[in-house]
Length: 452
Image 1 (tube, rainbow, N blue to C red):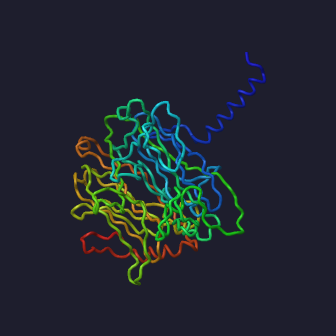
Image 2 (tube, helix red, strand yellow):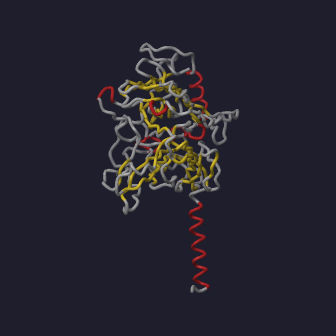
Image 3 (tube, rainbow, N blue to C red):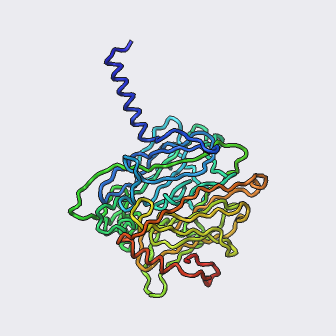
């Protein structure tokens, strides 16, 4: 029989464990119209003015079992659970990657790379098309609060299927979260674009010297780097979290599985025959005064066939819009940025706070196997931009599986709330976007410009 002192110690330990647990799962599973929902918190992200956190967090909390994901939404919050403005912490990107870990192996820690060249860990990535670096199932950036991720009925992203897990392994999920603290930064937008001179960086995170022509991007704002801030600023450290909400249903034969495809406008396939996706690129400042649009395109051969269920682009500040075209020049999906106009979280002036999405009528947008698709990304070139991205996500379902299913489009609408007023640093970018938003026109190559 335990003594009173021992019982007290056990009680205190139990309370500590409950407290620690409470910092992760924010609530229990809720069910609405058959859809389950759970809110989680990532491990804490420690930041101080100008600091960069770009870590991998393994074995994150995630729904268990054989399920169909219906949506995956996220935002940065502080220790009180309050949303954090992009004007204070810029969410460069977050991605969620599925992987298989050999049973009995201890969880790996961040070591500068994914470390999946070992037999203990296997990446269970999406269906393409990039060979490396874009294996996530879910992921967005500053636009995360106002970009719908809902997968309409009867579709779902299938995960947790025990038949797909290699023998001796178990399915797990990881986060890569890239957050930049811009409080007191001497050049806020320069920090978010990872301009090397602001970080005083000439070597990458592996100690390799950077090309002198590389002016900014991921190689200059890796984990632990510091962007330049004003000298008089008090260094206040705080803990943040990525709050993520997953909605799902238990798997059943009535669900039509969809495949996740991610395209990158820097893909080299058209020139090399290899899907070497560079992920980022630079937009040069325009030397003319009558056109401030920088357009970049890439073409790839689509590896399978099916119906497009959903589509959305990922762009950085200065982005005008993006579109995915079929081989005949038809628009498969176009996606445009929603810019904030105020100071509140989710409406930050000068930042992309959402992206428009595509939910085609079922069966109305088809892609054939081997069809050459062209991705176009447009940015304002009134000023130069470093480290920009041009990604495009689509969900594709097997056409034959959809035919006998009753289809009900149930999209989660994320409505932007606009607050009048502009932050000074965002004015130039917004002005550039207004200039670039002009009437539709056809380019010489037959593609419709999405810079409208």
